[in-house]
Structures are given as C-alpha cells and as structure tokens.
Length: 216
Image 1 (tube, rainbow, N blue to C red):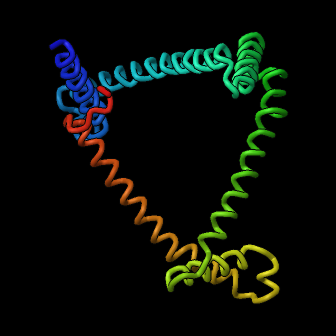
Image 2 (tube, rainbow, N blue to C red):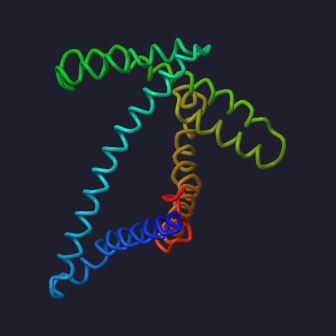
C-alpha cells in the first residue's frame, strides 16, 4: 500500500518537475507579457533546477562514501584485488587532503594532476589506440562489397591525412575532404537525427509516466 502510494507520488513529482522545466523553454518565448506567466514559470523552473543541483551534490557525496565502503570491505575480506583497493583509497585520501588544505589551484593539486593523472590518462589513451587498431584490423577484412568500400574509403582517408599520400598522388587530400564533408557528414546527420528523435521519445515516455527509471 505505502509502496504503491510512494511510487505514485514520485511519478507525479517527476512529471510535474519535467513539465515545468520544459514549459520554461517554450512558454517564455511567446508568453512573456501574459500576466507574468513566463516569469512565474521561469522562477519555478529555476528553483527546481537548483534543487536538482543540490540533490546531485548529495549524490556525489553518497557515491564517494559508497566507493570507500566497497573497497574497505574488499580489504577486510582479503580478496585477491585488495591491493588495488588499498592503492585507490590511499590515492583518494591524499587527493582529498591536498584539495581541502591547499585548494584545487595549489602546487600539490597541480602536481597530482600533471604528474599522476595526466600520465595515467595518456596510458589509457595509448591502450585505447591499440584496441582501436586491433578492431580496425578485424573490421577491414574484405568479405563482401560493403566491407570493400569501407576499406577503400578508409585507405583513401588515411592517405589523404599523411604526407606520404600527397607524394603518391596530389588528389588524395581532395578526395579525402569530399569523403568527410559529403557522405560521412550525411551519415553523421542521420545518426544525430535518430538520436534526437530517440531522446524526444524517451523524454515523453518519462514525462507521461510510461517509463519510471526513478522508481527502480
């Protein structure tokens, strides 16, 4: 009983907040002088967005404590990966202490960012490049006509990007630009249109209560 009432209340609140925030976008464009309607909706929407920012901040703290709790339990259970949990907790503690004591723009924070975080990011991107190269090698196996054109266009684009392609044939950069600006751009626009329509459909389903991810 109480669970059903709670879910209904959460759904009503979510729909009302979504409609107010959505109305702020549209109503303010044509009802700016209609008895102060646009100003009232804008104020309510701004208040709700502010509440959402506060809730997101609390969620960040909850996520922080959840990470600490999970890895402390791993260390206490002496699991095989406990050493990684210990390293993570020590690094987290040092970063928080340095940030709280000296601020995000201090020499200590810049040292952590420049000599620890950036090298780690560079390592991850280097590994990502290897994975992409491996995936490209598997994808570029010519099995049919479609994969043949995929490999052909990929080779032309690669040759148009590097100086070697210019020395081989001066038209490679021109063909590369046409491939990127005509068929590739058309495909990207089609994908973006599909993403936009899917986002609108998902938003409408949430607004009308058909999907309720906030009750899961």
